[in-house]
Length: 368
Image 1 (cartoon, one colour):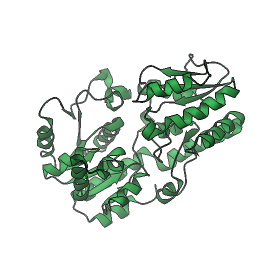
Image 2 (cartoon, rainbow, N blue to C red):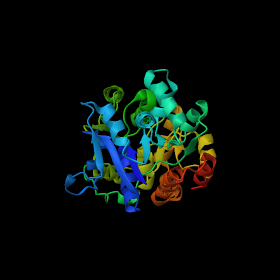
Image 3 (spheres, rainbow, N blue to C red):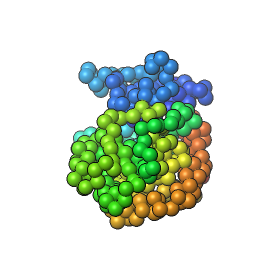
């Protein structure tokens, strides 16, 4: 079986392809040339001499790239296509698995745009649709995708760089780290920032570090800047490499992620692996369906609810310590990288062997 992993959002394609190859699977990765910072394997800290391996194929979107993608796909036996790549996989006439990671299934496939219609058709023609965010269960059910199954998002935590002490952190402060993209419509950053501003007005022992990225980053900065909490927050001017991100995870007290989706994002999962208490919003009913145990996340999607959580964490040191231990244990139990790679190998081999979806699903939905 010659396998193509198409798509590299947040480097998940890279991590999966490299692990498949380590397991003896003939797999290549297809990704965009000159990718965004967060989807560039160069920034994972793994690549020696900052050179791409020869099993990565690039598509240049400045040229006749759509036909080129289909041409590349036709030279493989099976395609694992993420985000919008299932559309091209459909036209390749090769068997394919669609990987839905977020807004592709949550928004685009629900729309009546030409691309949305094509993506819906690609999902329905796929051998299997894998969704990697728990909240996408609702989207799959809305589209009546009878070929959909959940596999947790994959990330090789064991390959994270060792954390380094960061001496730039303010001393004697309880530090909240908010590394999430500022996209208010999706991430609801504004709800958290308003809650933090309320907290910081009444306390001098709290500090917020955020990253200035995303379409609403300026709005987020201005919200805090106009809240009368000068000197109690800062915005990093650029995205962090994996090494930098791990350093901030290690040196902060609490990580704050997203509040509009209902699922844990990759940043939240990484923070939990680093043993950090996490504030985010999860749809607990969906997590109960897909996991045998809810994640130890402090969850809310209202300003008042988040404000109460912030106060509780600052005041109760033991709570932070308990959450740190529980977070790491939950990740190890349900997001074991080796176990997830085994699931994907099982999936690819089963599809290649032309097994029925019911049999494939049964083998994948076993408790993690």
